Length: 198
Image (tube, rainbow, N blue to C red; front, side):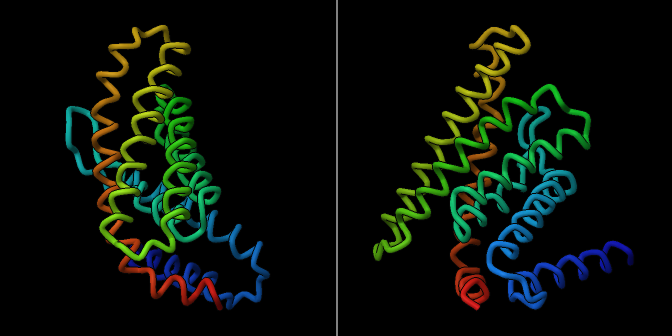
């Protein structure tokens, strides 16, 4: 009962902020939405854990990050993904992986956000999806396999190859979630663009 009430309250606030019911100017509204995006990233990451390999799971917070990259641009998407990871790690006590994961999300947010921006006017949907999926794979490889692994080598003196192999699970899981997010971004486009313009 409490969870349902909380979910209804969150939906009301998000809907009101998107529509501008609180009489906010655009920058305040965008800031409020970004804060809500960070909160949704943390909630989805903590509450909906779908295990895939060993101790790894699909980080469903990436759905929120992809939505923000798509509709609000690379900066908002990067802030949602990076701050979301930092808060999630602080809440769960998993600080060991946080610096590398946060740095990786900066690269993922910027590159995926730019790919959405560059393909905004593409008329050929298949070409658009291929371009975005390639950017997802490349940015996640750079962010997770390279930067996260290097950060862990520097901070914890782990061998680089061992970290790359360990992080390959996270790489695969993150690519899957970000790719699955594409149809969701497309299906919500008419609703969200209507509210953004208002």
